[in-house]
Image (cartoon, rainbow, N blue to C red):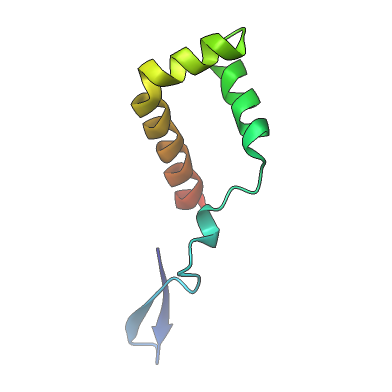
Length: 76
């Protein structure tokens, strides 16, 4: 994501994002809180069922979380 502005009323100058260390994507919630939310979202009643769901569908869950992060960044 770049920061763009008009310089000298003539040309547009684009610079890289000022925070290049990944803080824009950092989720400060605890892992247990994230897991409880995902367990509820995917309607897994027990920890065992949730674990099995992640084993079977881990790539889909990771892709979904990535898409959510990209949507959040695009709004900023």
